[in-house]
Length: 366
Ligand code: ZN
Ligand code: ZN
Image 1 (cartoon, rainbow, N blue to C red):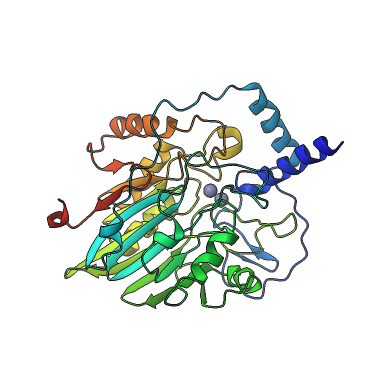
Image 2: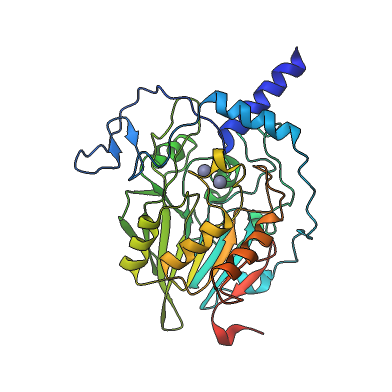
């Protein structure tokens, strides 16, 4: 009985971890509700095209889980282990433009003198509990206490693989004062509930100046849920970070999780005039019948890269947690095939090793 209860709780942990099913019926009130904004609802938020993402029933979730148990997901062939991070470089506080992939959707973006951390996750599991739910294959390549002082933390949405309580608490307590947590509308209340008050909540297309960068929130096609009763009561989104390194304006896009919607990314590319760097998810996409509305596959990631007019994209959200049915290293092979099929240059859309830093000032490379 106890074992069955644990298995059930583990299934619920997975269902709420990011890729899961939905229970509707919450009766909260959206304090931000603005009837002139189509993505606002009295009880929460919705996608620009509400039909593009529809809630999955628990029946569909359990069908996926049943089919998943019958699969034998091969262990990765690729060596996914982290490399030794260049802590001297990332902690050096020099004026540079770089990105370091720490794992999953956690990346350190350094522009000028500003350190920006995306969707920080340093815990063992992407789950409401640390004894069940999707477990790491790779430890975080950089530990929280090895990071440089973080100025800005971006949280794209409240799924457990993107918003981890232990990690945000640790960052809030960093020496030298807390970072500014920039979040989609509503998530500041959750942060407040865990004792984090240095926050700024944005609606889509709103922006905030932090130190010497400007951060904008953009629409993406996704959803939110942290408990069984708060579906879509907080907003989700992607972020644009604009700043300057060594006299040159730099623009970075970080998408969080998203399904493919050409309109979103064309619009973002048009408004900002393209990007020097885009961080785009390439993993957690199988089975397509369940995932396609919320997670792009590598081919769609390549289309996003094109729509955004990104000069360079780095694939994230793969190789760290096994959330879905594709082998952990399959996104890399699929990305290479899609890049080739769609005519991208060889180094236009790349992946990094866990812990690898990409220096984007050309004269910065050793
Ligand atoms: Zn998600
Ligand atoms: Zn995710």
